[in-house]
Length: 307
Image 1 (tube, helix red, strand yellow):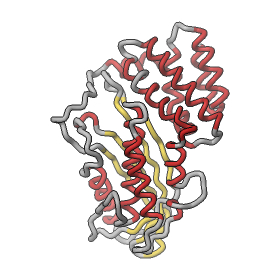
Image 2 (tube, rainbow, N blue to C red):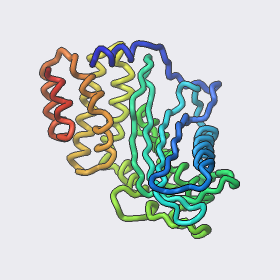
Image 3 (tube, helix red, strand yellow):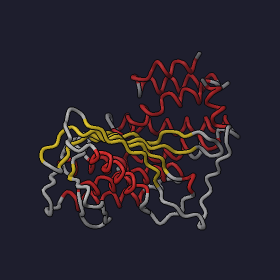
Image 4 (tube, one colour):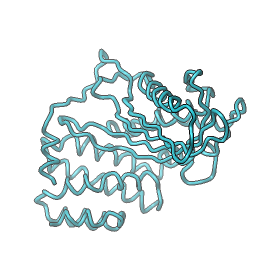
């Protein structure tokens, strides 16, 4: 309901002003590791793995930017172990969801949702996780570092036009040195395969100049739209509409674009809430028509805008 949406937006006064005096790690991750049809003789290994991954992500400074505690990027990471080919080697799937607070509110909005079906790594409780942005340490630290930079990049794109570029380049460094590493027996085709969900492909996709409207659309949707919704709802809707138009063009230009697909999957309910209480009937008709065409999977949700 839009009333609940607005109530959540107006509940708290969370100001997202970056100050050089405020310094904190960028990420605030919750990590859950589960086993799926596999037997682990010592279940404490799973608990320690979960804690080590969370500590690795949360206690490291990934950038030189200043983050207040309330500005930290919230992550939920779900790792499902599907096989243990040998002692200390884990084949897994991973789902990652990041959120972003909306300026002037207590409302958190989903920004990115990614599934990795080949999240494979070696892990030993006796070996602490370590990471270098320019050289290979382990496949697990490379995986976590890659996704940390990717999440930070997308988050910065929502605060500044193309603001995530430096972090995508750091993620690309991780891809390059990990794909070519020969120091461990951790082959992982997710770094250099040809499929549409491989990690290098994700970066190529989001940094492709032909798809730049997606990234500028993120800025328009969040910073010029959601962040001003409380004070200027009509102006916010206009910005969101413009952002959706750009993202629609990306989806049409490159059908099957993963980030565009993920965007609409994460945002269908929120978009419906944004426009449902609009008094501009022409705008409502326009947004429903556009989104029904580009995102037919969620067409029933968009139709509620007109009710």
